[in-house]
Length: 433
Image (cartoon, rainbow, N blue to C red; front, side, top):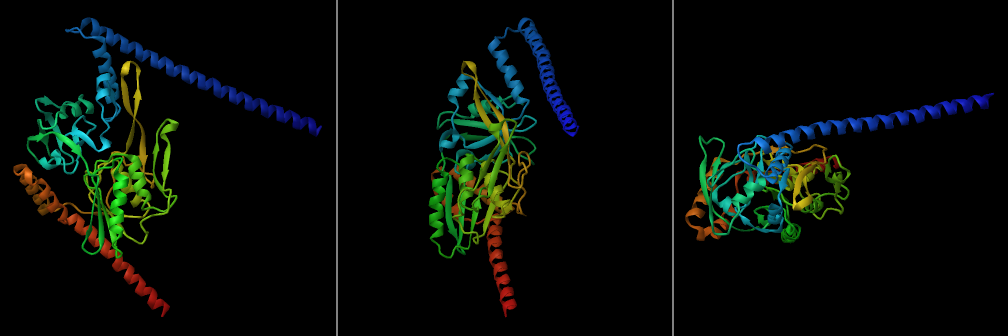
């Protein structure tokens, strides 16, 4: 009797389970069909609009122009980074992380309201020497007004040209009543991505202007030179006005500072390929008792923010300066038929504290704005370079030796660390006595 009851109960449970699976599968199929019906409705709506434009618009338009415009409109409604490449644009597309490219030397983005904004001018480039700043809004390129429907690729194409040719861009800056023109001579942009020196007090200073393929090797050389100082008290890592670059380079450099197994960054999106985690693979090359300070500002973006977040949220660095830009998304280029391609956002970056920085940035531990005196000194240098281009190298070397107030605070943080450590040591000695 018991056996019969158990068998009956098992069969009831089995049939119930199978019914639920069946119900779930049917539900999934119906949901998919509903979605497809919804899509078909809007495809018909689009084709109605297309036919009206094709037949009744005041001027004749070719299908190529109308469909390209439709795709651009769809992508621009997603975010500023998603865009269409025509066959010609795809051929012209250059990977700027190779270390050499033609242009002005600025990284740009589109804001949510369609404005063309400078993320940062790259150090020692025509745009930097002209005095352009992070957050500047480009309103006109030569005679072409920047409109919300102008794509990033279109803007980049307008600004690039033969080295030695001039371009005038009109820029609006916060606090200005109206835009001002900047006439800049285009050049082949050669970037030295890592600069370094030893500051007074045995403090190593490493500046990343951008993260490129050769940045890791350049960083190794800088580190070797700095570590020759046997009394090394700390390291300042300067990523101010660093617009980013290669994720792999930022991850590899983070590895030098962090303990093995530390989470550096991870990406997350809707597709399985977008879910990736990056960990430190080695024991730190820089001893953990050497304090590290990250210098940041509003021009610190993308890969530069990843390095900052990796060190900050693994308790390996103190962040000094101003809030970072907040570029934390991943774009993937997909080829299409007929030689076209689309670049769309497929994932977002998440810091070791599981926060996404996209549109938010990283708040510094110690906020320090650049002083008015330092800003005036920079303006003076830019003007001097503009008037005497032959003195550019001399002025640059002079600038590199200058210590601004943000760097002064970073130096103080390292000194405070050693003072605190010394005081803790004395407390331990008293306890032992």
